Length: 230
Image 1 (cartoon, rainbow, N blue to C red):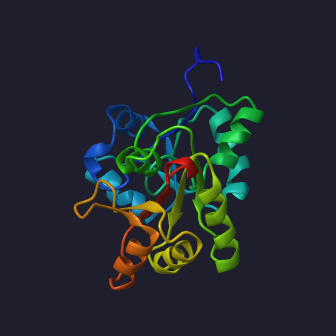
Image 2 (cartoon, rainbow, N blue to C red):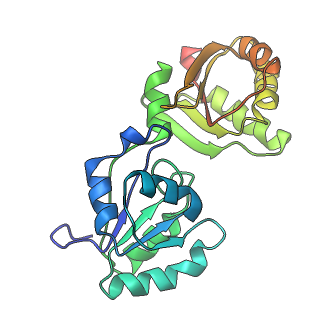
């Protein structure tokens, strides 16, 4: 990417909960876009309505991204300004956008990536675990066996390890952790930046007991500290 040229495509982070976290550059980019490609048009429309922005929308999600790429590349090469957003946080990080970004790079379409909200860095700092080195592995596997292997690798790692986890699978995941390492200190970050944000620290045994007695809701980041820090 040549920074001297005005980019045709901009990857724009959006709030992970609190709408006040959107940046001035993000707002300006969305207002000037000829087209906004978003993960869910209905979801993104709520944010755009809040910002009083009315621009054409097109869906760009995991199931159609590859199909959309030629059209978006052609429109960018034709001079249109395209903004890429996901439902929350920074595009490409466990969200659509990476394949399109790579296509922009491969076909010399000017692009830029704005800094902004991310559940990954927010949870990492808030956890109190060593912030570097760290590794992020997206969502844990749906199958218990493969999930157990992922968790064991994190327990053995010299890095702080982060995973996304769905609320309905969290109790099962904590039970696996309790069986693998009952005394290991972990952190469950839930609903970051939202009204009911919570950070839970404790051993895997303690958090397994806590969440087994409650209905879990919201967006969740699970953090496991480096092996030497346990």
